[in-house]
Length: 297
Image (cartoon, rainbow, N blue to C red):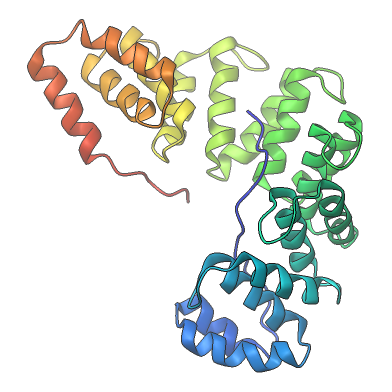
């Protein structure tokens, strides 16, 4: 699957002398101090303070969540050339949060940030070309921008570039190249990449077919709460593919995937339940209730 968008992230930006105290407070969760530091600087035109205020309002950190205010502060910083503010403002136009949805305006801001080699903006610009949002759909152009971001190590871009190679969109189909990019993202702990890499092992595309290796990668994604990985790991346990057959674990993973609305997982769970005792079903349900997602490294 392609990663269509990312949530806003408070990225680890270099601390500037004027906003260092506010940034330190924000990272520690001391939002009152952060606001006290940022607000006067932002009103005086400090772009980094404006950026951070945008983040605070966009995520409701120490202030009421207010997308309109977030967009306003991002715009002030973006107009001064701050790449993250440009990217976040573009994302707000893409999603229609705090501003009217406008894909062309989103692309405008992504392009400005991408011109500064900001990886997240390059990725979003690739998504825009991939799906034809704000620009004519152009897979070759999407590949160009995905590659620029992927070369900087952005896992989402590595996944999407892998998908382009797997499907032969904008590039010649090349399963080995797809595996290369999926593995780079998977090694960063990115669940989409882990799930896609597992699928290549299931089908034997670009790598030798190996259910055992597939289960390894599905498990890593499933443990983070990735629904397709949970579904496929559940099927692995149900059929004994790559792992010993275990209906309790199969039911547990299918139950977790089904709880997120995966209808295939719900159907598969019902089929597995038909081969289980009431005690086994109760144990599987207990395991699902007690399960907690792991965070990626």
